[in-house]
Image (cartoon, rainbow, N blue to C red; front, side, top):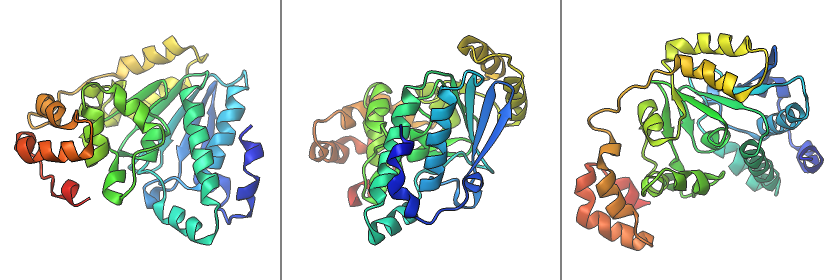
Length: 279
């Protein structure tokens, strides 16, 4: 049990769980809302603890059919709270607890035995993507923006990203992880990150229909989301139209070879790669 491994974190000052994660019981559905809108719902330790404990409890509760995860305000989640993470590292080694809980939770979500629905509105970045991308259903909108910005911060993509990015086909995963390039909702659906595309204005009705389901049957949940699914075409300037050039550059075996390929072929991507070379 993850709860038994959180004793070290008990001494860290934390806000009340209810202020970090809002829980609503609606029939067989459990709606969990990441609730730190002032900081773009960035993940901190108490939020992770609340999610880990809730998911573990719900998986063993026969009255719970499925889970819906969303973010408060205008975004889903902008990733980990790096300011808090840095502060923990300066105080003691409690940052290791946060890493442990986050990785445990990412694995638990990937192996969860009940349907998981992520409503991806606004920013879906870094660890926020890791909290949901391996779930059963991932719903993007026209306002959704995805990125893995770790490389630009001097870090590396983690939270299971090396697995699910590698399943996007070609070298798209390598490109996203090394450059931090942003994808919009239509692109997320087109490349397989999202399972559905639903207009933002339809999300309240989708939530209402999900809350009315009498069971957590996966096909019943799918049917409801399918009924709202309305994919939008990717733009004419989308990076997804340049997959051939992307694969030619980012399929190399080393960063040095990728950089060299960018020098030769980078203009084919029509992107400003200055920040990539600096990092």
